[in-house]
Image 1 (cartoon, rainbow, N blue to C red):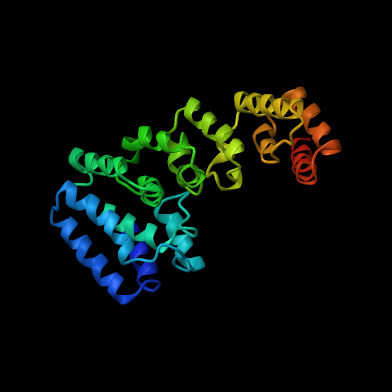
Image 2: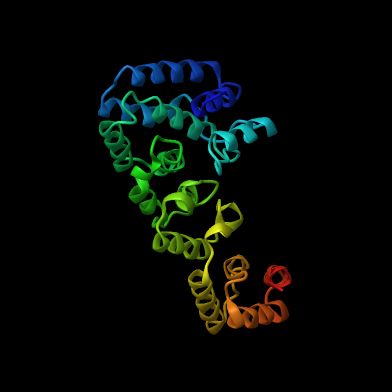
Length: 257
């Protein structure tokens, strides 16, 4: 398991029917020999006939640790079997490192359904030179579908490494709106700053003015960068917020002091 495809294959083989595995191996070989764009997109779609849509490999602690060694920040624990299979198809493309390979990946997004989108977005970080796909990942973060947004934002090292400051901040604020867990945003604390704290505090004030509860994850973004305003808002939340908000604000306050 010295490569990402090897790791995915070793985990997936034990979790899908033998017929599905045989189909996947044949499809990977076809793509490795240079199948064209139409065939590639067709195989990505066709894979749902052979690989279960729900459920996924049971990743051992050793396998998850190996995933982190192969690509820091990548955690496949929540990947479905079908997502693993589709990732293996993408990684099998003969010219994946060349411009043609990148254009084939981009084309696959154009006609993808929601399940295919999630698999493709999760796979971007695994590709050679993932920075080539920053614009595409940004499109995923603009999606109104929570599962698609989380495919980019959660358990994925691409955003923290390759998003510029504007895209990174927008992703974090969007996570609060769609209630995606910031605990699963890799590298979160390495790129917190005063600007993202201000944005989170503005959003908290808007929620309170509208009589709505503040997302407890908001306080993760304030942390040590909110200044006096942040401390005051945290103290208010710890005194009169929802139970979850009180707990989150109190924890951040304790760390900030």
